[in-house]
Image (tube, rainbow, N blue to C red; front, side):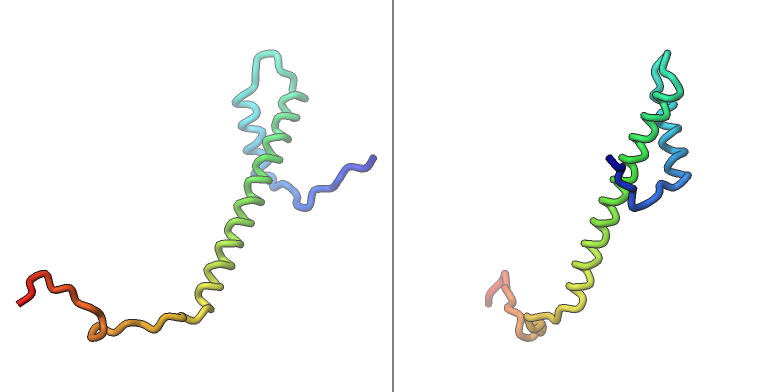
Length: 90
């Protein structure tokens, strides 16, 4: 049974952040190996969060570009053509 390789490597900053969080939540009597496993889980969570945020930003960018490239179907209304509601008719 072969392990699936991760597509992206986890940055050293993320690893440090994960270890810092794992140490901050460490329970008394917890071994270093257990803390390291917890840190790895946190790293995976951070990586997944970043991946989701990148995908979300990419979709928003696509929508924004599509909106910019799309010609306006409705003709702009000139001020002289706009209906005016006169609150005080004469």
